[in-house]
Length: 495
Ligand SMILES: Nc1ncnc2c1ncn2[C@@H]1O[C@H](COP(=O)(O)OP(=O)(O)O)[C@@H](O)[C@H]1O
Ligand SMILES: [Ca+2]
Image 1: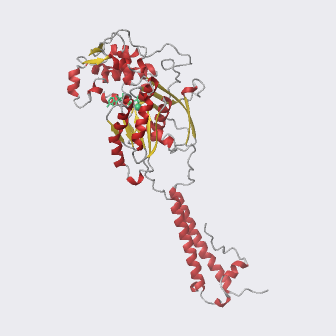
Image 2: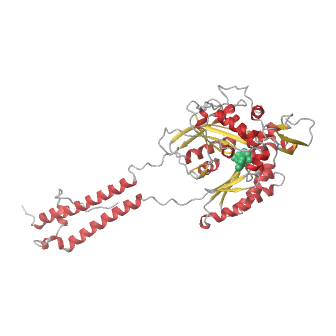
Image 3: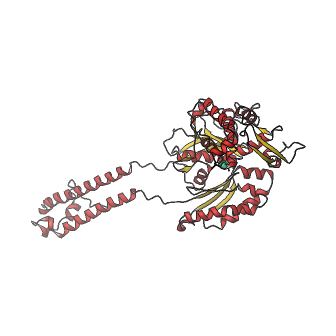
């Protein structure tokens, strides 16, 4: 706070008169006396200092370049996010149940890469999280081996020089809700003035799938377990979210293959054939209790490539009959009416982008015709057309595309008109869509519950205000000297 010489041409208070100038200065040019020069210099320094402080106070501090690392331990993969993806091309950590130490080992190479990417001087301040999703939820459901896997992962991650914050299994609700936070944070739909419609989040994994959106007609009273409340930037959001365990695309495929007569498969291209192990199907917790009494250990899996027949088989793993609520999606799960736009990411994007079906303005009948054509294409032709694609994925695109359409249209009840409200996305503004960013933002409190103090003026407003003030002050300061001089240069009349 800077005190100005409190004198003004309008003030004729004695204090002002007594300050300027001493009597011996009578009749001399008041402007070149040492007193005046000192006072003027002080005034100018004060004004310059004021302007400097004002500018510094409002200068946008360079955003401290922060890092954060989140490992997404999915059912089929583990990804490391440090604002860019470091994909670990192995299987999900839940696959190491029988040899937990391998789970920790599987992260080493990528974490060493991360150690190179984060500046050394920031290692200690960089929070490191591991969140495991549906693959580990299934392992935990099936056995106590999930603890051994998490422990092995913990030991491996603690060897790295980051600020280790823990490894845990997310609930389906968290996975859905944080995916919604990520999509809306990246799309700048959270820090705006209230009332901006948010975007729903659709996440398709290997072992589970999540749907999360805000519905004006849903206040959480019907089926409270599907309700998550957020207060972000001063706005309240009542989110509907549900995670369908076993309805990720890999587990859904196993469930379709459990259908007894499933040897000739319409969801695989004609000419596709593979010898498969029934135990891989019936070991999944998603099929516990489904195992027929007498089955061979292996079966020959043949593709026949028929989209309509595939749709029928896919629909057979959904239950649309019972619903104790006002309305349901499937398997008796409450779901309010769909509302607004939706971002569909992870496997939704991987599959639909491969099939060239990410354009949701395409009429649904045309989408189905394209998919039917792909499914009926002979397997050899498919392999010739896509030599670079991993056969593990290539063989599954007909099923996965059919599954996605069935899940969206029959499962979540998107109408053919509402289908165009869906956008298949991989990234938003160069960041991957997924739960990890929302998870880290939440844990590091980077999204305030209250709106940040909105500046009364934009930055430029501050600068011009301060500059105007400084000029006015300077003029005032000079004016203050003049009348006092004139008045002060005469001897005060003693009456
Ligand atoms: N390039 C790709 N093409 C097709 N599917 C893919 C591709 N990359 C990953 N996927 C699939 O995306 C899904 C990712 O699931 P993941 O996140 O690991 O599991 P979850 O979220 O259920 O724990 C898996 O089904 C995986 O096979
Ligand atoms: Ca996932």
